[in-house]
Length: 259
Image (cartoon, rainbow, N blue to C red; front, side, top):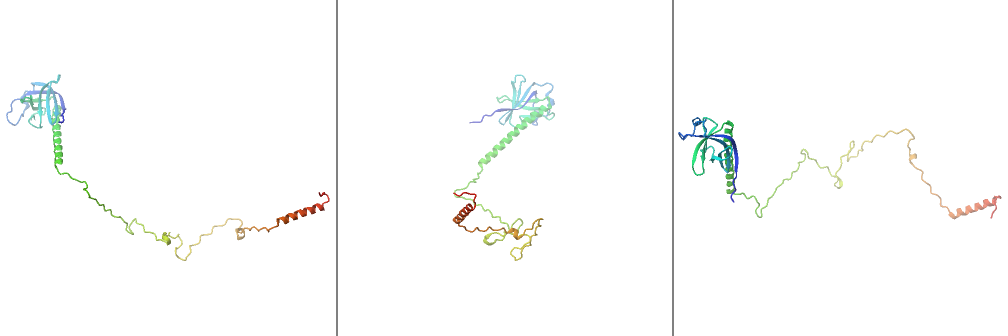
């Protein structure tokens, strides 16, 4: 299914003048707009530039009804379909067609110089876009016709990665030397300040703290008295002694009556 082309509007100018142009004197084109009797235009109306695909259309329309007066298809710019004159930047010669194969050259002019500039730029931008699209299409076609790279793995194909082991040299900046291992594989801690490890010398004695005023601490104060073991006593003997003594006390006291 073919893609449908839509017609887009490129430029609209509300006032344009149309002139009859004399035949060309040579192949150099229409050089002088002063020969067109500029004070007597043959028609005036609205100019509209549209585009459909790569072709632009210059349409001359009635200001009120929008009825088409004439149109000039432009397939290349600059080209024979649109020519500028040398004595003014406000006038152009365009080639109009009626759709039946008949063609004629007419002159168009703009009252404002800015409108003429916009007319020229609209055609330039359109055909610049046409060239860019054709270049992109050509590049895409070259890529399709060119050889394609197959970067996939074939059957049974493998890849090998070689990652080198990064080891620090002994004595290099930032490296640490291992501590000597002691008995049982334990690392030995460095000796404390003031002493030597592995020698017969004893470390310097620490200073004796000052004593507070009060009772001096001696060895006798630190030795606590040990409890003495009680002699084993005959329980029944003590009970007998106690009862005997009680009877004796009762007999000796004359004030008590014994029952």
